[in-house]
Image (tube, rainbow, N blue to C red):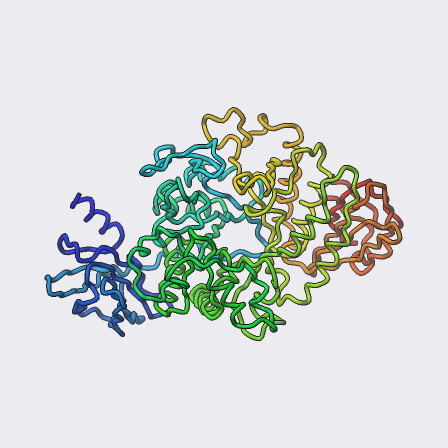
Length: 615
């Protein structure tokens, strides 16, 4: 056991000169020379370590700025200044207490300079995967302690892992995806009989991935393999709360490490109040300081040491794993000043990086350089829940129902509220809402219109795994129903939907359509970089068509959607702003050439994506 302990310490970057029970954790486990910020907080945890006298060996470019003792004597916080002169190597610390002396080596590593930290933008197509539900590539990591997988239980572990995702990177790349967003991958060692944490949102260790998904090294290998295929990686992070079985919960460092540290107090979930100029302070704190659930204690980011810890943790994962972006869960639930400081700090270290915050309401208020928020959030991207809700209403599953595309038009007209409409994540569904596809559907009219809009409107499009093969699931059936296993991700599956021969005709039609539009999108600067011009549908005059264009100086694309169950006719004269003197356009869907003079008859629920050909 002693040898195993020493091996784990060496792997983590911390070297003990001898076996000691004095120090059990050092976080972050290592750091890098050459970072832009010269400040580093090292949290040391161990029996009475807070009573120790701390000394550091002479190390060029590194000095101890201050040492902070916590209210709990089992914690010590060492703040270092690491200037530009510091080289990679081992810093040695000595901790002297009444019971003896302990020495550790702390590694400063060279920065890798490898791919990663690229950010994501409107040029990308994100593909959201819940790792436990996509594919099981390594059955050896399925079980951990008393926890075992049970695919027949909706909210139990099902066994998906990093290896399963890596095994299907060719499938993902072939679909036209350029970035993966994985639901949280960090350790969630919660008792499964009481708290089902397969989803990953109850972190119990901020520096380790969950063993049932793989190791830290497996995660890095997946990211490296993804990068080689031109696929970025977005990491889901949660700084609002941790899991109730996080290692520090039985021995917290400060009396204010948590909000309502005395016991569970439920948040109101009323995130409107954060931007509400009329809301009293008590309403705001009831939202931000309450616990998300009894299993997820609320972290108090107003504690400056916890704030530093969380900020450093995100930077550690960017540098260590070379992730390209972060999706931040429950963004409005977190202390506002901390969020601003965090986003600003990350962007200073990695200027090309991107963070998207999950906010269901008051979206323009949260975006960086907001037109309606006097305080900067430094958050580049928000999730467009307004447009998602509009698409729910626009594309209802009712036989022969018209699609009221004016709903989409009216949402897009409000883009003046955003500082950057291109930095908005747009989606049909995700792990928290009912899937777009419905069990009863027998045709793809809704699907094709919605996919076309998703992949050609402004913003950063995001797909949810299985949308391409028409997976279904209703929120009313429980969250597990939204997070079904991908058919074929397990060797015992009778149907392997990764292969076209195992899909139904309707599934193959859906997959082929999405793949074609997504693949074309990657080549279209007009869609990925161009500005949006749109024309109002006028349903009062029986015009159910929504027509919009994406244009750059040298490329133009005109999108035509007929929301009616009847044929519609449009006149190209109305769209002269876009068409100009061009006489034809090539339809991306059919590869046919379409004249741009006179009228165009559009079939019921018809679609055109026209690349305008220069005269």
